Image (cartoon, rainbow over all chains, first blue to last red):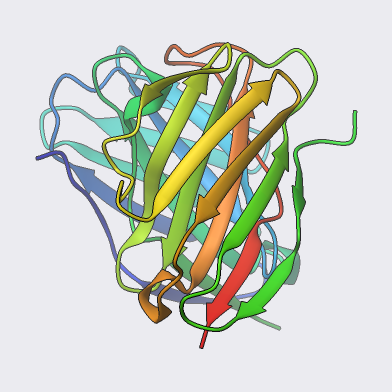
Length: 112
Length: 115
C-alpha cells in the first residue's frame, strides 16, 4: 500500500539551514504536504506542492519535489529555535483528503 | 474563528470504561476527520465525514469504536469498552472541501490514557 518514509530526527544549529527529506510510494500522488506539530498541539499545514511543480518557495521555506525518485524535501533557511517541532510529510492519493497518508514525522531540534 | 475545538483535552480512564471524545469543526467546513496518533503507528485516519455522512470508516475498529456527526457543528468518537491499546492522542480535523489542495485544520487533540 501507499507509504511515506521520513528520518525520525534532525539536529541543527540556530542560523543554519535544515533539510528534511521524505520519500513516498504512490506515483499518482497529486499533492504533497508538509505539516508542523509543536509540543502538545495539533498539526498545522506549512505548505504543499502540486505534483506538476518541481519547487515551491514561501519565505524561509523551500519545497523540492523529484517525481522520478518520489522524493520530497523541505528546506528551512536561517533555522530558529522556534522551528523546533515535528515535521510531517504527507501525500494524497486518489485526489481525496480522505486518502491523506502521513509519514511518522521528523523531530527537528534546533540548538542555540 | 476559534479553530477546531476538541474536548476533553486529557482523559484518563480504566480499561472497560466508555470514553467519548468530542469535536466542533470550523464553521462552514463540510469535511470532518478523526485521526489517532501513536508512537508506533504514527497518524492514522479512523473515519471521515462529508456533510455529516460517513465517507470511510475502514480505519476504525468497528467492534468498539463508533463515530457520529448528528449536526454540522458536532461530532463524537466513542470507545466502548476501552482497552489499554487505545491509549493515544486523538485528533479531529476539518476542511472546507475534500479534494487535493484543500487544507485540513487540526484541533489540539485529546490525550487518552487507558489504565
